[in-house]
Image (tube, rainbow, N blue to C red):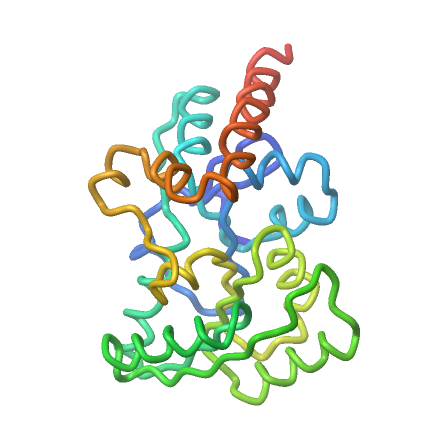
Length: 243
């Protein structure tokens, strides 16, 4: 687990609170992100909560988490999105001529990712696998995914199966995977492939990335923001005034 000096506690979670450049990655580590949606889901899903709690690095991916820590403890932390850790790791791999593996999403998306990496980070070796799109994987399917990853032996394994499935899968199989870093980043697969356009830096800097995503994908995002937003606020207020 990450040293507590680099984290700030939010109820039952140790949230990463440092610059990415200041953290050296040596042993096998599991990186996850947490936002207001995953926080709410984890409160009702013990397996998901355990996966997040046992992250070696749990990144604050959302203005809701950053604001909650400020409100509860008067501490300022920096939002670090899945796209941020993805870019940071790719830069590092390119310098070291390393290897990365993408597990999840469709063949079309994965091919677009590989094509983009070949142009932007030519020193990186890339492989990928698209698992079946389903809620639960069979033992045979899990073993196939593990075998695909281990045959390539990546420095970094990116997992994109949507939350909470990707976090549960990564935590459950961490010790079976021959990868130095296991990183669950969900929608970043589509952002990097260009199949979904991430809001530009202007909106990100205004902390309104969530609002633009809601406008662009209302059917998929309304529940995450318009329903779970108030649920998250209620949970944080309960935590603030529990005594």
